[in-house]
Length: 411
Length: 177
Image (tube, rainbow over all chains, first blue to last red; front, top):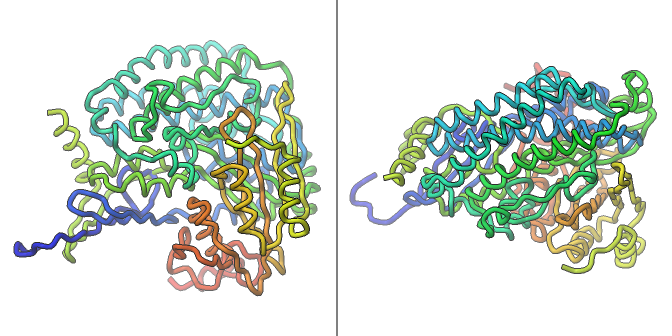
């Protein structure tokens, strides 16, 4: 840039498709004025794999396993939402015990996802020791998941009409041990994330999403709840056995008495939800009746019923990141579905990024983008185009800027 | 907030408002859990001409109806779009899903945008444009969202006719690199 130039011009920073803070490729184009973000454009679709199209060549049982591979973290929510839709169409009654087991699995996944997110958030702020602490805790919940389902990530636990594995008396000691471990360590996490002065300075008043915007842009999950929108499918609609359990929408005013809709509030909501999930699992274990865990254990029979079924329906449930909704249309005589539409929570949380990021600094991009907990995959390279001259700002440098801001504030 | 209507009252209010333009109304109720709680899905087919008014009417029931997503079907001669709304969220088990379906002729698949009523509808409208080849009139941003820019023009992944991806998937070797 020539030294003589006096007029202030904005410049663009493209971030992505392979990019910071996100585990999944998304491209941003930022319009920057000095340090301030004045415009944001989001480009999606870099990992469009035509999963929905592939499903029209498969039968519903096969789709469960395909759906599981949509997302590594929500590997339980997608097949479950699909199963819910199919059960609605074919009028399959799920045994009551299975409904409770489904809640337990969903809450385990929520704990796992939120703890993972807490680690990522800490990393974005430059607290790598907290990353290791939280992921060490996450390991416990993964061990429990493996113990209960046989797998750590793609669990293969759900089936149409119920679940595939029961939780028996022998399982209980290990479940309680893990839950107690979390209860004991919860205070530690709370102190790090909510009381630490530096975290407060980075997170409070940063990346604000107002209630109005959250409602208008149809935000879902913790992102919406942190802005004070009471919206949680577990509370709003009777699915699984959620109606029998004591659940409330978690909004930040429970703890602080006010709603700001900033990054700090999103941390509060997720932390409190971990506590809520532990409570829900305990409630389920207490209330769970004895009985079958699946309405029809023979897969061939289920498929025969579904081949005759025809109609359309939706399956909705609360994934860790918000509402997930699947639309399924089945035709009689055809084994594979006519249409299958998957809508993951991040889909609705893309647009709220724009009001969140406007007016923030470049160093805040990682934490603001991460605060909605988008589905992610990260590597290295951000190109900064400044007055036609292109230089590259890689993942490490952007991260370094974020860390430096934290250090600056700590002084 | 205004008084919450029962599913039957909601259906009635739509019927009163749009009379014959609205048909195939179906209230899907299923009970869950030991306490027999219900969840309700309302399905209705509406005429294209009143689509925007229906969404506006929905916005009178609750100020910000939540639009989850719009899905679509290729039904041969027509293209069906289904908008999945939900209202009355926030209260305990009060939520009602409202699924509004609208059919567009394939010869002229056009529909008005609802982004001015629900700004969050933008991504799903853009997706419908590229996936089903419908034209959303008045959409503020008509770029593609999920499929890449070098994907052939005039080919729509969710279509089941000759403009669908079937041929392309069979002959992948012919696709220009």
